[in-house]
Length: 65
Image (cartoon, rainbow, N blue to C red; front, side, top):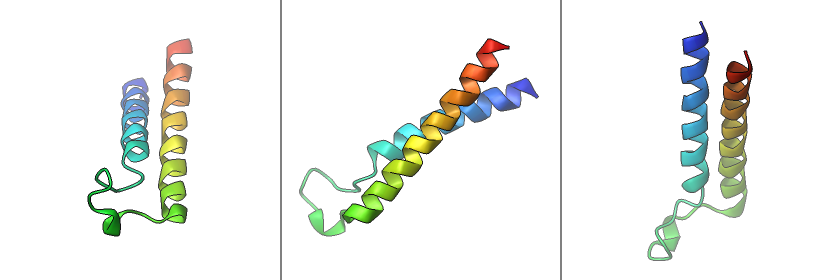
């Protein structure tokens, strides 16, 4: 069971980083018509941060045991 928790923590950590890095959904100003608006950007960034924090919490708890 601890392996499953560890892999889940790593998955949440990586998925959170990827979600935060792609939150704006733009390509350096070349395609601003497809970029996210501010509420969508904030929602994706917050969910990414939440997933990152959850993954980090799981991994810290697993390392402490």
